[in-house]
Length: 255
Image (cartoon, rainbow, N blue to C red; front, side, top):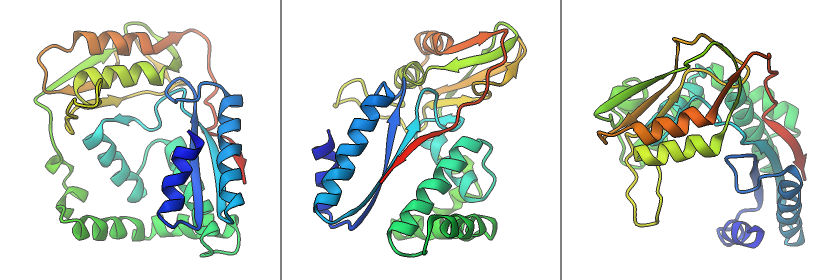
């Protein structure tokens, strides 16, 4: 795994590399020890070739952000770049990785300075302006930035209610991923086609309180039958009586 990941980046000519090493139910690495070994191996490969490499080990026990699926995640990314993102974990990870990348690339003298400057870039609207330039450069329609309705839209929207009141104990990212795949947002085999309009919108995250009649998730799909996707989601979201502290998104940084 380490050689496969690093070979592509080194072959592309990268001198500075920041790796987001996921760990948890929705990641290939299920345990922190496995993630540490993978991160350390990749950093070691890079350093042996005089590359500046940083590995950030991050939590993937629950989905990062509220949106799952291509169009959904683009919409959420636009909100973050506008400084309007709702998920603090997503915003924190974006800023942390960008700060380490800007520092490793020599743009700033230290990570702290990079973080401060990048926060300013978000607040001043420079980040979303740059994203617009990237869309135009690739022949896309920049109107999606202010008119997200121009993104692909699924024919069906199905709401899933909590069913009981309580605190969300956990949201299993692997099961959410299976639900999204059934809706058309992922591939079961390499020949499957991904539907960019399919996906899931979460209304709550682990640690939040929810009432039994509240909508906990919305499924978007072009398939008539949503039953299996709903079953995966119900299994993924555990609700209990105990309060749960929200987990930090970053476990460790290895450089």
